[in-house]
Image (cartoon, rainbow, N blue to C red):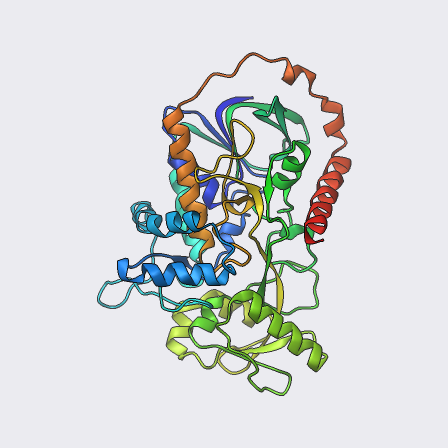
Amino acid sequence: MKTDILIIGTGCSGLYCALHLPQEMQVMLITKSDLESSDSFLAQGGICVLKDDSDYESYFEDTMRAGHYENDRTSVEIMIRSSGQIIQDLLSYGVDFQREKNGNFAYTREGAHSQNRILFHEDLTGREITSKLLGQVRKRPNIRLLQYTEMLDLISENNTCYGAVVRRENAKIEMVRAAVTILAAGGIGGLYKHSTNFRHLTGDAVAVALRHNIDLKDINYIQIHPTTFYTKEDERSFLISESVRGEGAKLYDKNMNRFVDELLPRDQLTAAILSQMEKDQTQFVWEDLRTIPKEELTIHFPNIIAHCATMGYDVTKECIPVVPAQHYFMGGIRVDYSSRTSMERLYAVGETACNGVHGRNRLASNSLLESLVFAKRAAEDIAMKGIIPQQETDLFAAVNVKYYENYGAVIEEHYRAVRMAISKADE
Protein backbone atom coordinates (compact mmCIF):
# COMPACT_ATOMS: atom_id res chain seq x y z
CA MET A 1 0.00 0.00 0.00
CA LYS A 2 1.11 3.56 -0.68
CA THR A 3 0.14 6.89 0.84
CA ASP A 4 1.60 10.34 1.32
CA ILE A 5 1.10 10.38 5.09
CA LEU A 6 0.77 7.33 7.33
CA ILE A 7 -0.61 8.04 10.82
CA ILE A 8 -0.39 5.16 13.29
CA GLY A 9 -3.18 5.69 15.81
CA THR A 10 -6.67 7.18 15.73
CA GLY A 11 -6.87 8.95 19.06
CA CYS A 12 -7.31 12.69 19.29
CA SER A 13 -3.73 13.52 18.25
CA GLY A 14 -3.81 11.33 15.14
CA LEU A 15 -7.23 12.58 14.06
CA TYR A 16 -6.46 16.24 14.73
CA CYS A 17 -3.16 15.99 12.88
CA ALA A 18 -4.93 14.49 9.86
CA LEU A 19 -7.46 17.34 9.83
CA HIS A 20 -4.69 19.94 9.63
CA LEU A 21 -2.79 18.33 6.77
CA PRO A 22 -3.37 19.79 3.27
CA GLN A 23 -6.34 18.09 1.65
CA GLU A 24 -4.35 17.37 -1.51
CA MET A 25 -2.24 14.94 0.52
CA GLN A 26 -3.38 11.35 0.74
CA VAL A 27 -3.57 10.32 4.41
CA MET A 28 -3.94 6.82 5.86
CA LEU A 29 -4.79 6.31 9.54
CA ILE A 30 -4.51 2.86 11.06
CA THR A 31 -5.53 1.52 14.46
CA LYS A 32 -4.95 -1.90 15.98
CA SER A 33 -8.49 -2.03 17.38
CA ASP A 34 -11.75 -0.28 16.48
CA LEU A 35 -11.85 3.47 15.95
CA GLU A 36 -13.28 4.25 19.38
CA SER A 37 -10.90 2.14 21.46
CA SER A 38 -8.35 4.85 22.14
CA ASP A 39 -7.60 6.37 25.51
CA SER A 40 -8.70 9.73 24.09
CA PHE A 41 -12.28 8.46 24.29
CA LEU A 42 -11.78 7.61 27.98
CA ALA A 43 -10.63 11.04 29.16
CA GLN A 44 -13.15 12.22 31.74
CA GLY A 45 -12.03 15.44 33.39
CA GLY A 46 -11.58 18.00 30.65
CA ILE A 47 -9.17 20.15 28.68
CA CYS A 48 -7.25 23.10 30.08
CA VAL A 49 -7.37 26.52 28.46
CA LEU A 50 -5.79 29.89 29.14
CA LYS A 51 -8.88 31.95 29.95
CA ASP A 52 -7.04 35.26 29.62
CA ASP A 53 -3.53 36.68 30.00
CA SER A 54 -4.05 37.29 33.70
CA ASP A 55 -3.99 33.52 34.26
CA TYR A 56 -0.83 32.83 32.24
CA GLU A 57 1.74 33.00 35.06
CA SER A 58 -0.46 30.93 37.35
CA TYR A 59 -1.15 28.26 34.71
CA PHE A 60 2.53 28.10 33.77
CA GLU A 61 3.58 27.75 37.41
CA ASP A 62 0.95 25.07 38.12
CA THR A 63 2.23 23.02 35.17
CA MET A 64 5.87 23.43 36.20
CA ARG A 65 5.23 22.68 39.86
CA ALA A 66 3.26 19.52 39.05
CA GLY A 67 6.13 18.41 36.78
CA HIS A 68 8.71 19.01 39.53
CA TYR A 69 10.22 21.79 37.37
CA GLU A 70 11.64 19.21 34.98
CA ASN A 71 9.35 20.47 32.22
CA ASP A 72 10.66 21.97 29.00
CA ARG A 73 9.70 25.62 29.53
CA THR A 74 9.36 26.38 25.82
CA SER A 75 7.01 23.42 25.33
CA VAL A 76 4.89 24.59 28.25
CA GLU A 77 4.71 28.11 26.83
CA ILE A 78 3.75 26.82 23.37
CA MET A 79 1.00 24.64 24.85
CA ILE A 80 -0.53 27.36 27.00
CA ARG A 81 -0.34 30.11 24.36
CA SER A 82 -1.87 27.80 21.74
CA SER A 83 -4.79 26.67 23.92
CA GLY A 84 -7.26 29.35 22.86
CA GLN A 85 -6.93 28.52 19.16
CA ILE A 86 -7.29 24.81 19.90
CA ILE A 87 -10.60 25.45 21.68
CA GLN A 88 -11.81 27.57 18.76
CA ASP A 89 -10.95 24.71 16.38
CA LEU A 90 -12.87 22.25 18.53
CA LEU A 91 -15.91 24.52 18.68
CA SER A 92 -15.85 24.78 14.88
CA TYR A 93 -15.98 20.97 14.75
CA GLY A 94 -19.11 20.98 16.93
CA VAL A 95 -17.55 20.09 20.29
CA ASP A 96 -19.94 21.01 23.10
CA PHE A 97 -18.49 22.26 26.38
CA GLN A 98 -20.54 22.85 29.51
CA ARG A 99 -21.85 26.40 29.87
CA GLU A 100 -23.34 28.51 32.62
CA LYS A 101 -26.93 29.71 32.42
CA ASN A 102 -25.67 32.99 30.96
CA GLY A 103 -24.02 31.14 28.08
CA ASN A 104 -20.43 31.57 29.27
CA PHE A 105 -18.17 28.56 29.59
CA ALA A 106 -18.32 26.66 32.88
CA TYR A 107 -14.82 25.94 34.20
CA THR A 108 -13.89 23.25 36.70
CA ARG A 109 -10.75 22.63 38.73
CA GLU A 110 -8.62 19.57 39.40
CA GLY A 111 -5.68 18.66 41.61
CA ALA A 112 -2.62 20.98 41.54
CA HIS A 113 -4.55 23.74 39.71
CA SER A 114 -4.61 27.04 41.57
CA GLN A 115 -7.88 28.04 39.93
CA ASN A 116 -10.69 26.85 37.63
CA ARG A 117 -9.48 26.71 34.02
CA ILE A 118 -10.74 23.36 32.72
CA LEU A 119 -13.47 23.06 30.09
CA PHE A 120 -15.54 19.88 30.21
CA HIS A 121 -18.49 17.97 28.80
CA GLU A 122 -20.13 16.11 31.69
CA ASP A 123 -17.54 13.46 32.64
CA LEU A 124 -17.06 12.38 29.03
CA THR A 125 -14.90 15.19 27.65
CA GLY A 126 -12.55 12.89 25.77
CA ARG A 127 -15.43 11.12 24.04
CA GLU A 128 -17.04 14.43 23.11
CA ILE A 129 -13.84 15.81 21.57
CA THR A 130 -12.57 12.65 19.89
CA SER A 131 -15.93 11.61 18.43
CA LYS A 132 -16.34 15.05 16.83
CA LEU A 133 -12.82 14.86 15.39
CA LEU A 134 -13.57 11.39 14.01
CA GLY A 135 -16.76 12.71 12.46
CA GLN A 136 -14.80 15.43 10.67
CA VAL A 137 -12.15 12.96 9.49
CA ARG A 138 -14.82 10.72 7.98
CA LYS A 139 -15.91 13.62 5.76
CA ARG A 140 -12.49 14.06 4.17
CA PRO A 141 -12.12 12.18 0.86
CA ASN A 142 -8.31 12.29 1.13
CA ILE A 143 -8.28 10.38 4.43
CA ARG A 144 -8.50 6.58 4.63
CA LEU A 145 -9.25 4.80 7.93
CA LEU A 146 -8.16 1.21 8.55
CA GLN A 147 -9.36 -0.59 11.69
CA TYR A 148 -7.80 -3.71 13.20
CA THR A 149 -4.54 -2.92 11.42
CA GLU A 150 -1.53 -3.23 13.72
CA MET A 151 1.90 -1.70 13.20
CA LEU A 152 4.56 -4.35 13.74
CA ASP A 153 7.61 -2.39 12.65
CA LEU A 154 8.90 0.66 10.83
CA ILE A 155 10.68 0.34 7.52
CA SER A 156 13.82 2.46 7.58
CA GLU A 157 17.20 2.89 5.96
CA ASN A 158 20.00 5.35 6.73
CA ASN A 159 17.94 6.85 9.58
CA THR A 160 15.06 7.65 7.22
CA CYS A 161 11.55 6.23 7.61
CA TYR A 162 9.88 4.84 4.50
CA GLY A 163 6.70 3.48 6.08
CA ALA A 164 5.68 0.51 8.19
CA VAL A 165 5.01 -3.21 8.32
CA VAL A 166 1.41 -3.83 9.38
CA ARG A 167 -0.79 -6.79 10.19
CA ARG A 168 -4.32 -6.58 8.79
CA GLU A 169 -7.51 -7.93 10.36
CA ASN A 170 -7.21 -11.13 8.29
CA ALA A 171 -3.67 -11.62 9.76
CA LYS A 172 -2.07 -10.78 6.42
CA ILE A 173 1.27 -8.98 6.68
CA GLU A 174 1.50 -5.94 4.43
CA MET A 175 3.85 -3.02 3.92
CA VAL A 176 2.77 0.60 3.72
CA ARG A 177 5.02 2.98 1.81
CA ALA A 178 4.68 6.57 3.01
CA ALA A 179 6.51 9.83 2.36
CA VAL A 180 5.96 10.74 6.03
CA THR A 181 5.02 8.54 8.98
CA ILE A 182 3.48 9.84 12.23
CA LEU A 183 3.45 7.75 15.40
CA ALA A 184 0.30 8.44 17.44
CA ALA A 185 0.02 5.01 19.04
CA GLY A 186 -0.84 6.02 22.61
CA GLY A 187 0.57 4.85 25.92
CA ILE A 188 1.85 1.74 27.67
CA GLY A 189 -0.95 0.84 30.10
CA GLY A 190 -1.56 -2.57 28.58
CA LEU A 191 1.76 -3.69 30.04
CA TYR A 192 0.41 -3.19 33.58
CA LYS A 193 -1.95 -5.35 35.60
CA HIS A 194 -3.86 -2.31 36.89
CA SER A 195 -4.29 0.53 34.40
CA THR A 196 -6.96 2.94 33.21
CA ASN A 197 -5.76 2.34 29.63
CA PHE A 198 -7.20 0.01 27.02
CA ARG A 199 -5.41 -3.33 27.21
CA HIS A 200 -4.15 -3.17 23.61
CA LEU A 201 -2.11 0.02 24.24
CA THR A 202 1.23 -1.61 24.91
CA GLY A 203 3.91 0.90 23.90
CA ASP A 204 4.20 -0.27 20.31
CA ALA A 205 5.75 3.00 19.13
CA VAL A 206 8.35 2.88 21.90
CA ALA A 207 9.17 -0.71 20.95
CA VAL A 208 9.86 0.13 17.31
CA ALA A 209 11.81 3.22 18.38
CA LEU A 210 14.06 0.97 20.45
CA ARG A 211 14.45 -1.35 17.49
CA HIS A 212 15.52 1.49 15.18
CA ASN A 213 17.63 3.47 17.67
CA ILE A 214 15.26 6.44 17.67
CA ASP A 215 15.86 8.80 20.59
CA LEU A 216 13.68 8.34 23.67
CA LYS A 217 13.15 10.63 26.65
CA ASP A 218 12.10 10.03 30.27
CA ILE A 219 10.52 6.64 29.56
CA ASN A 220 10.38 5.80 33.26
CA TYR A 221 8.17 8.84 33.96
CA ILE A 222 4.89 7.00 34.38
CA GLN A 223 1.92 8.58 36.13
CA ILE A 224 -0.26 6.68 38.54
CA HIS A 225 -3.78 8.06 38.89
CA PRO A 226 -4.75 8.29 42.56
CA THR A 227 -8.40 7.26 42.24
CA THR A 228 -9.80 4.39 40.20
CA PHE A 229 -12.75 2.25 41.23
CA TYR A 230 -11.47 -0.72 43.22
CA THR A 231 -12.49 -4.16 42.02
CA LYS A 232 -11.04 -7.61 42.47
CA GLU A 233 -11.56 -8.32 38.78
CA ASP A 234 -8.53 -8.24 36.44
CA GLU A 235 -9.83 -5.68 33.96
CA ARG A 236 -9.24 -2.10 32.86
CA SER A 237 -9.47 0.16 35.89
CA PHE A 238 -12.39 2.60 35.79
CA LEU A 239 -11.23 6.17 36.40
CA ILE A 240 -12.87 8.29 39.06
CA SER A 241 -12.07 11.69 37.58
CA GLU A 242 -9.93 14.21 39.39
CA SER A 243 -12.72 16.69 38.70
CA VAL A 244 -14.73 14.86 41.35
CA ARG A 245 -12.18 15.94 43.93
CA GLY A 246 -11.97 19.35 42.29
CA GLU A 247 -15.68 19.76 43.00
CA GLY A 248 -15.27 18.74 46.64
CA ALA A 249 -15.10 14.94 47.02
CA LYS A 250 -13.15 13.75 50.07
CA LEU A 251 -10.90 10.75 50.79
CA TYR A 252 -11.20 8.67 53.97
CA ASP A 253 -9.24 5.89 55.62
CA LYS A 254 -10.80 2.63 56.85
CA ASN A 255 -12.23 4.45 59.88
CA MET A 256 -13.85 7.09 57.67
CA ASN A 257 -11.39 9.78 58.73
CA ARG A 258 -10.06 12.27 56.17
CA PHE A 259 -6.30 11.80 55.86
CA VAL A 260 -5.03 13.99 53.00
CA ASP A 261 -5.47 17.18 50.94
CA GLU A 262 -7.39 15.79 47.96
CA LEU A 263 -6.03 18.45 45.56
CA LEU A 264 -2.36 17.56 45.87
CA PRO A 265 -0.52 16.80 42.60
CA ARG A 266 -1.22 13.26 41.45
CA ASP A 267 2.10 11.75 42.42
CA GLN A 268 1.95 13.17 45.93
CA LEU A 269 -1.66 12.13 46.44
CA THR A 270 -0.94 8.64 45.13
CA ALA A 271 1.93 8.30 47.62
CA ALA A 272 -0.34 9.42 50.47
CA ILE A 273 -3.06 6.93 49.50
CA LEU A 274 -0.62 4.02 49.19
CA SER A 275 0.89 4.95 52.55
CA GLN A 276 -2.56 4.98 54.17
CA MET A 277 -3.45 1.64 52.59
CA GLU A 278 -0.28 0.13 54.01
CA LYS A 279 -0.97 1.63 57.43
CA ASP A 280 -4.57 0.36 57.41
CA GLN A 281 -3.67 -2.97 55.76
CA THR A 282 -6.41 -2.42 53.14
CA GLN A 283 -6.66 -2.76 49.35
CA PHE A 284 -8.33 0.64 48.88
CA VAL A 285 -9.42 3.87 50.54
CA TRP A 286 -12.87 5.46 50.49
CA GLU A 287 -13.98 8.39 48.34
CA ASP A 288 -17.00 10.44 49.37
CA LEU A 289 -18.96 12.14 46.56
CA ARG A 290 -21.81 13.08 48.89
CA THR A 291 -19.95 16.32 49.65
CA ILE A 292 -20.82 17.53 46.12
CA PRO A 293 -24.27 19.16 45.71
CA LYS A 294 -26.59 16.55 44.21
CA GLU A 295 -27.56 18.67 41.20
CA GLU A 296 -23.91 19.32 40.34
CA LEU A 297 -23.05 15.67 40.85
CA THR A 298 -25.84 14.53 38.53
CA ILE A 299 -25.08 17.05 35.77
CA HIS A 300 -21.28 16.85 35.84
CA PHE A 301 -20.64 13.15 36.54
CA PRO A 302 -23.45 11.00 35.09
CA ASN A 303 -21.06 8.39 33.68
CA ILE A 304 -19.28 7.90 37.00
CA ILE A 305 -22.60 7.68 38.85
CA ALA A 306 -23.84 5.08 36.38
CA HIS A 307 -20.70 2.95 36.62
CA CYS A 308 -20.73 2.98 40.40
CA ALA A 309 -24.39 1.96 40.31
CA THR A 310 -23.56 -1.05 38.15
CA MET A 311 -20.96 -1.98 40.76
CA GLY A 312 -23.57 -1.78 43.52
CA TYR A 313 -22.85 1.69 44.95
CA ASP A 314 -25.18 4.68 45.20
CA VAL A 315 -22.77 7.64 45.35
CA THR A 316 -25.49 9.91 46.75
CA LYS A 317 -25.78 7.68 49.84
CA GLU A 318 -22.43 5.94 50.38
CA CYS A 319 -18.69 6.16 49.77
CA ILE A 320 -16.97 4.20 47.02
CA PRO A 321 -13.70 2.20 47.21
CA VAL A 322 -10.81 3.67 45.17
CA VAL A 323 -7.22 2.65 44.52
CA PRO A 324 -4.31 4.09 42.45
CA ALA A 325 -3.61 2.62 38.99
CA GLN A 326 -1.24 3.28 36.08
CA HIS A 327 -2.68 6.09 34.03
CA TYR A 328 -0.37 8.12 31.80
CA PHE A 329 3.03 8.01 30.11
CA MET A 330 4.89 11.31 30.46
CA GLY A 331 7.98 9.98 28.68
CA GLY A 332 8.18 8.52 25.20
CA ILE A 333 9.80 9.22 21.85
CA ARG A 334 11.86 12.40 22.02
CA VAL A 335 10.50 15.09 19.71
CA ASP A 336 11.23 18.75 19.02
CA TYR A 337 8.71 21.59 19.10
CA SER A 338 7.34 20.51 15.70
CA SER A 339 7.01 16.88 16.85
CA ARG A 340 9.91 15.66 14.70
CA THR A 341 11.76 12.59 15.98
CA SER A 342 15.46 11.84 15.55
CA MET A 343 14.62 9.85 12.39
CA GLU A 344 14.00 11.66 9.11
CA ARG A 345 10.40 11.64 7.80
CA LEU A 346 9.14 10.38 11.16
CA TYR A 347 7.02 12.37 13.63
CA ALA A 348 5.46 11.40 16.97
CA VAL A 349 2.46 13.01 18.66
CA GLY A 350 0.20 12.42 21.64
CA GLU A 351 1.01 10.22 24.61
CA THR A 352 3.64 8.24 22.70
CA ALA A 353 5.73 11.40 22.18
CA CYS A 354 7.77 13.36 24.71
CA ASN A 355 8.39 17.05 24.11
CA GLY A 356 9.04 17.66 27.80
CA VAL A 357 5.85 19.58 28.47
CA HIS A 358 4.79 17.39 31.42
CA GLY A 359 8.10 16.98 33.20
CA ARG A 360 8.09 14.27 35.85
CA ASN A 361 4.34 14.45 36.54
CA ARG A 362 1.52 15.66 34.29
CA LEU A 363 -0.80 18.40 35.49
CA ALA A 364 -4.42 17.22 35.30
CA SER A 365 -6.25 17.90 32.00
CA ASN A 366 -3.11 19.00 30.15
CA SER A 367 -3.03 15.73 28.19
CA LEU A 368 -5.76 16.43 25.63
CA LEU A 369 -4.47 19.97 25.14
CA GLU A 370 -0.84 18.96 24.71
CA SER A 371 -1.78 16.20 22.27
CA LEU A 372 -3.76 18.58 20.07
CA VAL A 373 -1.28 21.46 20.19
CA PHE A 374 1.71 19.42 19.07
CA ALA A 375 -0.28 17.30 16.59
CA LYS A 376 -1.25 20.52 14.83
CA ARG A 377 2.36 21.71 14.85
CA ALA A 378 3.42 18.44 13.21
CA ALA A 379 0.82 18.91 10.48
CA GLU A 380 1.89 22.50 9.92
CA ASP A 381 5.55 21.45 9.64
CA ILE A 382 4.69 18.76 7.10
CA ALA A 383 2.50 21.17 5.12
CA MET A 384 5.28 23.77 5.05
CA LYS A 385 7.83 21.25 3.74
CA GLY A 386 5.45 19.60 1.31
CA ILE A 387 5.72 15.99 0.18
CA ILE A 388 9.29 15.26 -0.82
CA PRO A 389 9.43 12.22 -3.14
CA GLN A 390 11.37 9.31 -1.69
CA GLN A 391 14.42 7.96 -3.42
CA GLU A 392 14.00 4.57 -5.01
CA THR A 393 15.02 1.78 -2.68
CA ASP A 394 15.09 -2.00 -2.62
CA LEU A 395 14.23 -1.85 1.05
CA PHE A 396 10.65 -3.07 0.67
CA ALA A 397 11.66 -6.08 -1.38
CA ALA A 398 14.20 -6.94 1.31
CA VAL A 399 11.68 -7.01 4.19
CA ASN A 400 11.51 -10.49 5.71
CA VAL A 401 7.73 -11.01 5.77
CA LYS A 402 8.06 -14.49 7.29
CA TYR A 403 9.63 -12.99 10.41
CA TYR A 404 6.50 -10.91 11.06
CA GLU A 405 4.19 -13.84 10.37
CA ASN A 406 5.40 -15.25 13.70
CA TYR A 407 3.17 -12.64 15.32
CA GLY A 408 3.35 -13.89 18.89
CA ALA A 409 7.13 -13.81 18.95
CA VAL A 410 7.22 -10.27 17.49
CA ILE A 411 4.79 -8.95 20.09
CA GLU A 412 6.63 -10.63 22.97
CA GLU A 413 9.82 -9.03 21.71
CA HIS A 414 8.05 -5.64 21.75
CA TYR A 415 6.79 -6.08 25.31
CA ARG A 416 10.13 -7.32 26.59
CA ALA A 417 12.02 -4.44 24.98
CA VAL A 418 9.76 -1.77 26.48
CA ARG A 419 9.76 -3.31 29.95
CA MET A 420 13.54 -3.70 29.94
CA ALA A 421 14.07 -0.12 28.74
CA ILE A 422 11.83 1.30 31.49
CA SER A 423 13.55 -0.83 34.10
CA LYS A 424 16.98 0.29 32.93
CA ALA A 425 15.86 3.94 32.97
CA ASP A 426 14.61 3.47 36.56
CA GLU A 427 18.03 2.21 37.57
